[in-house]
Length: 148
Image 1: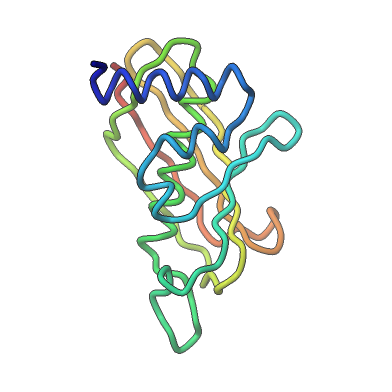
Image 2: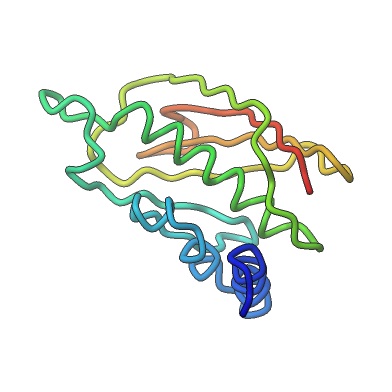
C-alpha cells in the first residue's frame, strides 16, 4: 500500500510524463475545491480560475475574496515548481507576500508563476494574476519555498 505522499508523487510524475498540467492540479485537493484549471500556453504553465459564486467575498460588487486570490497565487507558485522540478519534492511555503492591485470581479482569473531561483533547498516564485489583460494584474505574489 502506498503512502499519500508516494501517491501524490506518482500522480505528479504521471502528469509530467503525459504533459498534462490539468492532471497535476487534480492531484492537489485545494485546486479541485477552487475549480482551478491548468494548461500550457507557449510552454508556460497557466492556471485559470473560472468564476463561481462560492468564491465571492463582496456580493455587492460582486468581487472575488482576497483569500481566494492569495490561494490562487500560492497554488500557481506550487504548481509551477512541481511542473518544472526534475525530481519530486513537495514544496513547503516559508513566506508568501501578495500585493492586491485592484478589485477582481466575478470573471475568469488567470495566474502564471515564474521561478526566480531554484536551489537545492530554497525556491522563489513570482506570480501574476489578471483577468482581462496580463498587462493589468489584479494581484501579484512573491513566495519562498523550502524544498524537501
